[in-house]
Length: 239
Length: 108
Image (cartoon, rainbow over all chains, first blue to last red; front, side):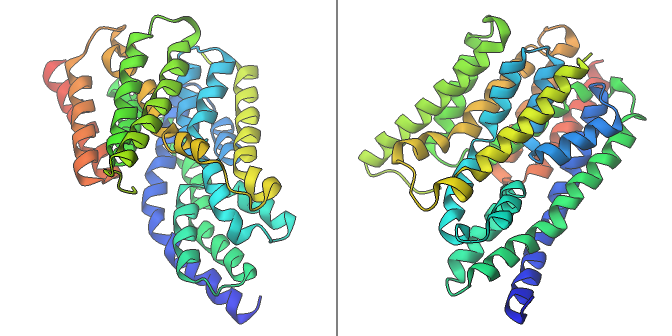
């Protein structure tokens, strides 16, 4: 490592460090919920290592507990992760010229926090070389991703000791609502969420959890259309 | 009980699929920008999919066999309000969980 990449790496570590506080409880909660769903410690940990995406992991787990068919589980959890494609597109101008093996590692570690820190830092330090940007990215990841694995493990151990009567069935809904609420920044986001709720309840009678697919697609279309209207009338504010 | 084969298909399928979504532009497509209409729909995937998963769980909770349950409904409302107004995810979870536990203790 040169001095420049070294200092970019450590700046990344410093910027990523506060997210320790966010990732720790989420990972533990996933471990707890996974053991409540009947997964053993090794399975819960494998889930976090292989998938490394909290909301999608909770989604897949909840739907498997609900006995949803395999394709609905996969389609819904992947839909939750579609935003990763957006992150990938947005980082490509900065990191697209890094060696292939580095881009593969970056893709694996591309999560909400590493994206948010990186894109802000890259916009600010436009003079950084590709190597410095890569070093920064891995700096951010260092305090976050190992913690995701370790705390899943801790949660899975604790989970086997918690009695089920404590209302844990509702841990996933509460977590999801808490994640969604701050995302409702624009009228378009609020309209998408409202449409999604109405459609999910209205089509709840469909077999194979297909109501979820209807509501997901419907919510996206409503959000996009409301955004267009807001843009046309000059009321759109970038979130 | 979750079927073991299904669990591993989901873990591996979701792992490969998520990696694919993260790698698609960075690794394969290069600098070409996405069409606007695609980006516009991608922006709303999370707020379209997550509420659809949550809404039935709130209105018809599995723990009560699908009967409406005041403590769970109250916890959902508190979580939403705290998250929306404070933008603090952990505070929203904490107060939502406290409402649920308090509600179950009070109402049984």
